[in-house]
Image (cartoon, rainbow, N blue to C red; front, side):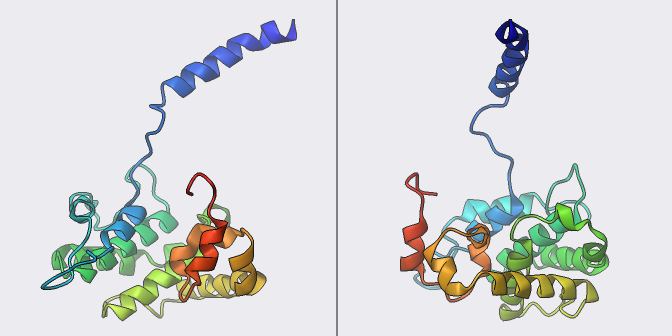
Amino acid sequence: AEEAELQPLIDQVRAMLRSMNDGDTSASAYDTAWVAMVPKPDGGGGAQPQFPASVRWIVDHQLPDGSWGDSALFSAYDRMINTLACVVALTKWSLEPARCEAGLSFLHENMWRLAEEEAESMPIGFEIAFPSLIQTARDLGVVDFPYGHPALQSIYANREVKLKRIPRDMMHRVPTSILHSLEGMPDLDWPRLLNLQSCDGS
């Protein structure tokens, strides 16, 4: 009797899952920007992106306010990390200075929102990845970024707390939450980290 009562719900869940186009994922400006930063191994006469379609995607998907991210829902964390990642990717290849300028203008005008955002809505690894992107921007010579903005101080503090909580050696030996944000970690021992790769390749 209990199974008969549950069957309509089971059928409804199955129908919902079937309608989701299994395997489809929404586009991520952040992930696309990281792919866009990968250089060709044989750059020849000069460094070039290995995946130029990812650079084109960035150019084609800037929002009217100069940012990148989810156009349907405004989250400061989402918009800030996506926008900075795209600005860094375009800057790496010396492309689209006007788009970079618009992105940096958005970052200047909205950095304060990071201090107002609910901590619970912070994406996993944000406090590791965002400071890393900021350092990459600095290394690339991006001067018009609010490096000293007060809203960044708590993010840097959270980063230090998290890095102290997970010693570097442990991070290389056992799976930890830091695996979500390896792109934000300099000087990693990749041969050791590859031992933590799952059997499905992830």
